[in-house]
Amino acid sequence: MRTISELEVCFYTYQILMDIQYVHKEGWVHCDIKLTNILVFNNERGGMHKLKLADFGLSLKACDRKTYMAGISLSNRGTLLYAPPESLLCGIHTKYYDIWSLGCTMAEMMTRDCVCIHYDTKEEKWLWQIDIMRIAKSMENDFSKYHVDEKWF
Image 1 (spheres, rainbow, N blue to C red):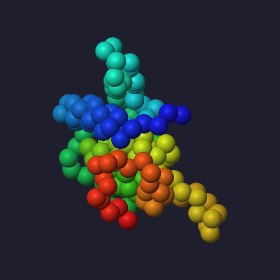
Image 2 (image 1 turned 180 degrees about the horizontal axis):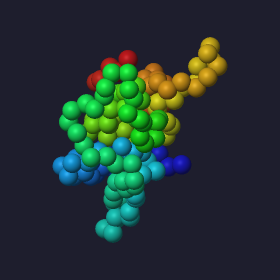
Image 3 (image 1 turned 90 degrees about the horizontal axis):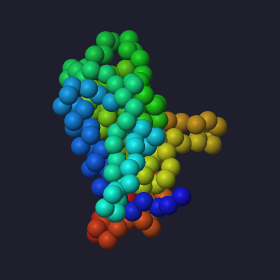
């Protein structure tokens, strides 16, 4: 599998953000942003690929207010590994859902691994959590010259 450079991740993320902005402006929440729901097109002039957000089958009409009622989950949507905590815990689906999913997708592009799953050897089960240290270690040698002054952990 080819490594994606930091510049490519930034360029691809920008393209998906533009798609998300359009979807949100039209009053929708995608609810299932992940790598397998992104179409990749060759750039006719060479260079980096063009990306487009796809698969709107789980999209919802956006609402700015939370639709959570105490003790009642309104259901989960999308792929659980990319779903934000408020969706998993309360069934809340706002525009922020897509931003969380995009963050998971970006991290997956950079690490080539799903970032929200972790095997707990003590509990002997898979857990849904963001393992920041595992992400940082997997990217340790991949940070660009733009981050040499940053202390991450």
